[in-house]
Length: 203
Length: 223
Image 1 (cartoon, rainbow over the protein chains, first blue to last red):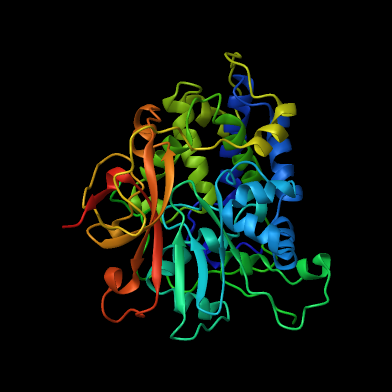
Image 2 (cartoon, each protein chain N blue to C red):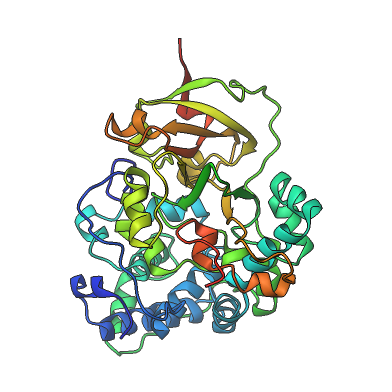
């Protein structure tokens, strides 16, 4: 099972969980609180339709089109909506740009807030107790675990997104990509680079 | 429940960031169902996002750290469904044992065909606010040291610390009241920048900062 190592700490076997979930779904369905088809619909959206490919298109367009980048930095929700990316947990998007002077990274120390329309649902590590606790107190150590070494004299700016503002990091555009199309550029933009725990690169 | 373990910023001891291969969005069918139940059920259970968060945080801390992400959601959904009178704990137990119970329909669910529009439409927390801003961008402020027993989004690690207003984000639903009684009477939200040294002491990198979004009632002027 790919379900990570903190699984060992769990006390309930998965079969019990499945039974509890089935019981809750059955009860809420029969009482009229949910329609199972609505569950399938929303799961399909977040499992198959919305994901970090959306954010990568936004970043690639920002790298290619200075006017779009200006609009993105001014009102990220409106700019992302131009590309069709909008909705729950993206109502108030803010784009923060990595530069030679600042490396941005995003966390939610209180729960798991994340910009769904551009990145989809967060990966398990983003929701982990370790990432939530450590990112604000030792961001550079966290970044090292992701293979990122930020120079000591460059600011690491951590955005703790505990309100309803959602943050999208615009990574630095890699060198040697001048002639690339937006589609080619989007392939360089990883999900982690838009959280700030990665960089965009040609490798 | 404000001073509890969900407020993780700065806590030591959780070790390396757990990474997994493949990073599936869901790891099992039951996780899919739990996510879907929350998304489809919040409206009919008449619970808002701040209330849901307050219920998750009310999980005893020893249990909170033991549960996986969607186990915490499941526990919270079960509690809300029972507390709101949608189902009884007894009926849930009976069903989970594989026995049947008679349950009559009492309400109408969110329609499946409306889900795509609901997700794409969103639900902004922005609200009109006619009171003037108490603080200006560039102003120094202190995060209050309040410890309300009810829901708040003022993390402990910034309480009592000095920061600088970097953005006025306007009137927004105030979670502290919205979680308690559904009163979304707005308060102004600010982005506040703290230096790492202010928060963590002299060993912190002198260039590093943390920006936290804080509502006006969380902040006080500095002399």
